Amino acid sequence: QVQLVESGGGLVQAGGSLRLSCAASGSIFSINAMGWYRQAPGKQRELVAAITSGGNTNYADSVKGRFTISRDNAKKTVYLYMTSLKPEDTAVYYCKLSGSYVDTNDYWGQGTQVTVSS
Image 1 (cartoon, rainbow, N blue to C red):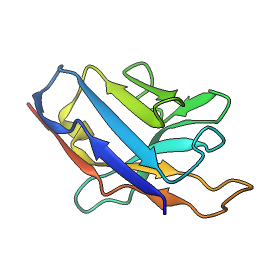
Image 2: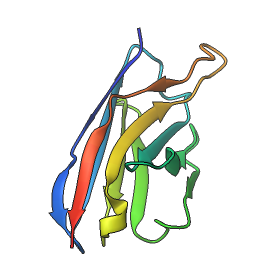
Image 3: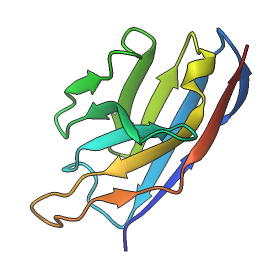
């Protein structure tokens, strides 16, 4: 059974930084693409950043240059380092493990709240 557990959210002032972590269990992990998504109140969930099994990354335009996604396959963990945070970054952040040739299902974590005060 695949489980994803996010951590690292919290309250931070505008301009501050946070690092989110997402630890996976029950999957191979190294073959899976991983992503961070966020959902603000009243808005749809949106992709923030993604990283392939080979380490290629892509980012939403709104976070380019401020957020960095990375992965540690040995620890089965994906990270999102967020800098220069803005109030509009306030949302629940979710980790997603994308399906692979072994298991085609996508899996989601429970989410972690990030609140940026102005």
